Length: 279
Image (cartoon, rainbow, N blue to C red; front, top):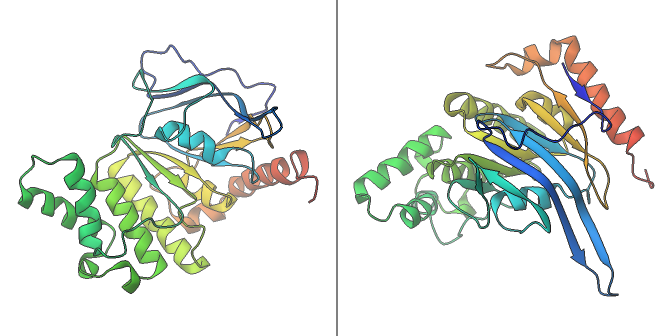
């Protein structure tokens, strides 16, 4: 177990030849209506290894979504840069797929068609039969083969999010970006999808960056937990190394005394050292 205090965090080895994803001295500043500026993020440095599962937690307003938007290419850094395999990220691309909290499915299309649309947009020259096989493979991966022809209105929240995860993975991205993917789900469905995501990640080992407000979720799923200080000018405050061996089992993880040590460290960071003023 390794805990990095903000005073001990050194910039990531950004010139390392084997670096997979590098967030290099990243800042994001917005102009305000009165002519001033508002700094959301200030000097973020982080290196993510290929195949790693990293969660980002912090209070609302600390810039978690802004950070992942710059990894996905939806926003441009004010200073610094994000690099994937040494290539600077300047725009969205199928190598970085995002799963949002609000499902983002086209309501007039079936689950099959929603996934096929994405595949067809990036692999136009693939034979139709091959693209359809990819759709079926990923629907089976998330346990929705029998729901292939159902439209989103006929699916539960958990099923919709399974479709979104299947669609994202069907593009075979290098990085899967999850922005509070289970935040809108009831606790039972949330646990089911956490376990399902854990299995999918174990089988595929795609690199994952996930925003969550749920410490238990982060501890179950992650290799590291990046904890952000409060905004404005939010920074990486601490990084928790999660030592539980993989493949993971929820019961075994939660019975490990180290689980509660890490949980208490995260709670202390969020609700004592960096508690909101109104908490």
